[in-house]
Amino acid sequence: MTTKKSFIEELKWRGMIHDLTPGIEEKLNSGMVTGYIGFDPTAPSMTIGNYVQIMILKFFQLSGHKPIVLMGGATGRVGDPSGKDAERELKSYDELDRNLAHQEKQVRKLLDFDGPNAAVILNNFDFYKDMNVLTFLRDVGKHLTINYMLSKDSVKSRMDTGMSFTEFSYQLLQAYDFLCLYRNHNCVLQMGGSDQWGNITSGTEFIRRNITGSDAFALTTPLLTKADGKKFGKSEEGNIWLDPEMTSPYKFYQFWLNVDDRDLPKLFRIFSLFSKDEIDIMETDFGHEPNTLKAILGEELTIRLHGEKAYEAANNVSNILFNPKASKEQLLSLDVKSLELISQEIPAYKVGKNELENGINIIDLLSEKTTITNSKSDARRAIESNAVSVNKDKITDIKSMLTEKELLHGRFSMIENGKKNKYMIEFV
Image (cartoon, rainbow, N blue to C red):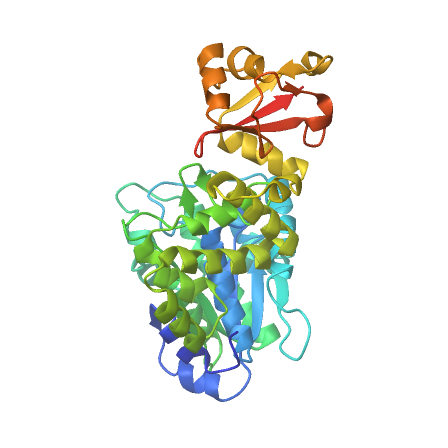
């Protein structure tokens, strides 16, 4: 895994530097530096897109520096115009507070909060809760000119469609955040995605105008897009969330197994904690087997985000669904949630549990209680050709009966008709 080394060197080989201000490398090489990234709690969970920035903080910490996670309890109430072509819909305070509390729990699992360079989580609402509007206008609004603020891309791109004063003021808030962290936490570096460059450099300029001889720095990373140009972090179903209730560990794991081969080298460098030498070796050994590399990355990330047990369950579900050699033991090892998940991924049927009172004949089950086969004669032929199995047990007798004792967790039965056709029956 990654060992302590130059932060800039680490980001360079990982392809994670888009822009930076002069002098930053010398500052980082002079000793432990405190740096931060801000996160607005506009969603109930962080996504893979947010996780890019968490990885930046992780590499920052592994390089011996001190990361600050600044939760946007204040900025989230205003809305960042960066990357938006229309005004954001404001969230309620209660929703933002719930989101913030949940995201803070997620962050605490992903960074180290012990040791000499322990991570810190702060809330920028604390910078403003006792400040009135006149104080803000005098102490904050006075130091950046309208001309300077209008020069930022996030503002220029909205001049035709319009921007409220609320969103226009966002860069003032972010600039003042940086000043507060600079003064109170000796934080000299702000990082973020490339779309944040205007907001971040407003902060370095704000500090320069307020503190003589100050040395504040900025660094941004490229926005992560897929080979087809689309935004990274979404599947056909929508966002890939870090919350297992919003994106199950299985779907999270499958996301990595299904990434475009062309994106794999970039994703390995951004999200894996393996070192450059380790990744080079893996790519040499398995470069002709991209699915092997995807499985390695998927395993690493699923374990890191959701734990060993969740990975094992996700891997077992994948095996049951896609590996024709999956064993009965693997099927029996699945818990109820995993079986429910399988029923969402393959054709599924619900049958009344009262049907099991005297057992169901397998042919009736295949052709009448479900539509797994088109007719009783089709069911009979499938059984006689040794194509049908129930819970991984081959059915060879057309008089076989399914009873309640054969059900998985008293609810489920998985039927296979041939190597590729899988069905889940839930008895309700």
